[in-house]
Length: 100
Length: 411
Length: 117
Image (cartoon, rainbow over all chains, first blue to last red; front, top):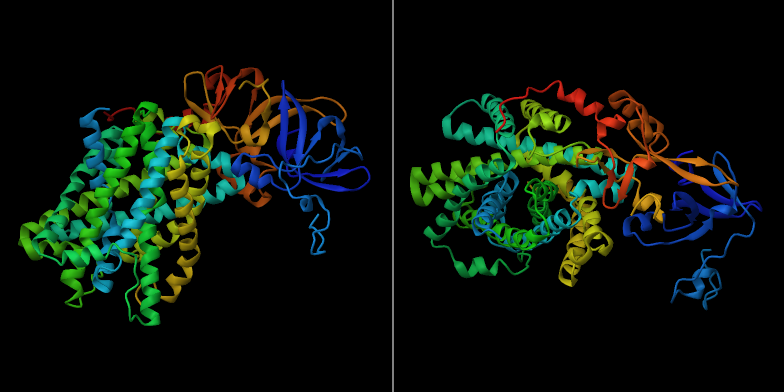
């Protein structure tokens, strides 16, 4: 397997929920520990700052041709300090739904 | 900091600042709009100083030239697009410089343009093969100091200094028709592109590594960029002001590069003309060498080849073959018979389109404390860097429409 | 950092230049080979260098051009040959030991070894 086989692949839970595309692979002591997915891949590459959601490698169940299947209950996305609640999917005061 | 080395570095930067596009656009800008575009030269010079200093600082802090980090930051796909665009822009610029050199030799000697283009290609290849990097840079840069004749000419013709100073204030001349306004806008974009050509940054950063710059050369980098390019821009402004004074009033449109040389002939006669042509020859020749090497640096660094003229040519074989092939390719473009002025216009256009892709990764990297440590961008560099990035992005968006609407600045 | 340090493969390793033990540039990290799979450990095995590693990273039409001009060669650099990863990847051996100098050597045959100061 190559890094390019993981990168840009869609991450989907076994329940069918799409979480985003892989834009980073974390390693420690020579072993892959986690995948980053979701929005922000291009931004992360350009700015070096982390964005998106981190999926531990132990949650990966299967690697298909076009997707990586993970357990249905991966760790929740952590809110960034000072982040607006509306970015996590709650309704904005205007009543317009968030993009998530 | 070695004072002699610093002085030589500054003088090299001064003599190497003006190339065929600045020569052409400064003369045309002066004749068409008087002193009204001086501020654009000054503004753009600050921009190239900011980014050149940044690229030099990245080279000495991260010990990596611009195109290595370009690949890493942009990734392979977008990096290849940027590389391809940069190669095309630099190749056309190199062809314009080569054509300019051949034209100037034609003025000086009367020899045929095509023969001079072929001869100078051979001379350039031989000079880069034989000479180490420092000698290449110094010879062309220092002999380009003959261009100082334009500054002396300006003093000799007793121009209205108050109007020249007034030209430093950002302005749009009043009473312009729509067509003239668009042409003025095109000249603004063209001057920004000509002064901030991407090859300047690639060459400056790679040159820093060629010369073995390290953290102790931080001040040298800063002084060379600021003083060298600042003084160099005064030569371009002198060409513009001469043209405004001598050609503008007479309704002369300096269509060909040789017209600029008349600016020194009018006050000083034959010797003024000869010195101006010598200065133009070495300045444009230096630019031809820089654009070719900048292209070769970009390609070699993008693919991880051994590169550099601090090595013998056979110690960096793929890099050597690349710059030789690039010179031959530039010659092939010249030999198609395309007018030098048209090559200059295309060089300007392609370069401004590539500029945002060149400067954004550099700006981000120079501000990254993980790479740069204590040498990361301070508040001044950060503010100016982002300001100029916004300006060049706007210029890049406006360039093609303005080029088409004004027929390349010809109204 | 070393290969055993915490590292982000895309933003801190991919597309970095390689320098051999003599300080010579010898390619770019064009891809990373991993060993393992889902449900088990996935380990860093080697760095991949060469135009063949562009497959999967560029569109297929571009890969055809790459193959026509530069071939499809891939050199695998084992992770135990990597000494340090920073702004560049430092190797623990000369480029020749890993076959990373073949293209330079082939290009060098075209050039005379004289005339330069």
